Length: 293
Length: 284
Image (cartoon, rainbow over all chains, first blue to last red):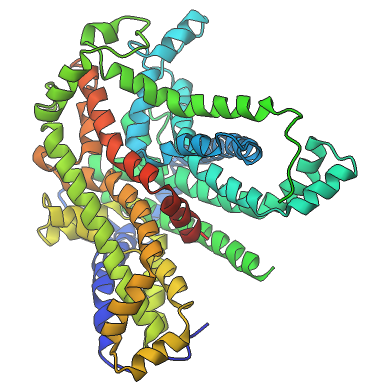
């Protein structure tokens, strides 16, 4: 859609675009280009010479069992975060839509985690579940559950999933609430008159009508779990113990910044770019569809 | 407005919502309580679940001294200042560059218009996390390491804000533009006197989202600052937690954590309407 009436300056629009384009070129396109370039290069240990190695870095990655493990771990982590953040959010939104008294109060508290930095959310959960000082760890011990995220990889994974999901519930809650509010009330009343119970109304009316929202949120949650949980993982486990919580983004960081292995780190960056592009494409295809229905 | 039947199962939603409140608020409450205890009280298991007056001391220490330990943290005062600078520069920077670039794309016709628009749009697909090393290298080459410019400049481009403003600008009626032209107002005059005032609610909505985004930055400041005095508060909290050799000053860490939460939480609570609008409008 284009405007009919416009201004006719020749130079001005370029000047207006310049700041954003400058930042974009220098800090987005140039580094992205470099990542692609470095991903097909091999650098010697002293960083003195570079040789073109084609797709060798990628081949090496996909033949590396550690990398494949990280890949699967990331998928499991993202799936778990998405489910743990979506299901409670939907439940709370369904309930919040029904209450009249205290609705604002409930909403205000439920959206708070959105404001909290991932790394800080990580610290909150780390503290509660710390085997030495944490209150929840103490309760678990009382219940006879052996809990130590510092030593046990599964415990650590569970902890980062909980912290990551906790932060994302707010976001999902708001979108589900907006989705629910757009369902025509007449439809639900008609169903009630026909004698449909709550569960049946949910299954046959609410859930299908919410499915665009749910699908959209699923993609957003996966993107969140893939990329935005770096702070949580770094604060809670630093990828440990023994790499049990190392996801793809964390590995790019670790291999590049800590281990200084530029070739593989860049190749991993390129793979991540491809993943983001795919996920964004899925998300926008959905948006297109929604606009037209 | 038809009324739903409230007599039946009236209590169930409240019970479930209270469970939600508990899940949401409990970690925050535990942190708050811990921030008011002495180290010995924190080390006791189970930790007491009500705040104590020691809190005043903890906050005073955190605010003006910081935590001792392996990481000599600057006082929270400095950390909060750094975070505030980063958050505000990023927020206003993003809003400013997005407003003018959306204005250029919507109100002018010029060669390369759609090309430039797509260039901005594509940055959506290049989050910091996927270009960590090369971006770091660029910033080093430009000598921006350990500076506020290095902390903020690379974050200032915003595809989402540009998209939102573009969307909104397209709804501004042509008649307004025509009227302005007849009155002899140039494009910048129209921008300042008509477009900006009309965009107020959208700007407020973006402000909330972007302020939280800027305040909560973690990976970028972690990479770009090697001097502790430039640390933002979120990064500093992580660094304060000992890795094992040194015990963690939990009471100071928890007080600093609460201090780090307050600004974004205040923004979200005070501007709740704008927040919800910003969130739901930009992501659609």
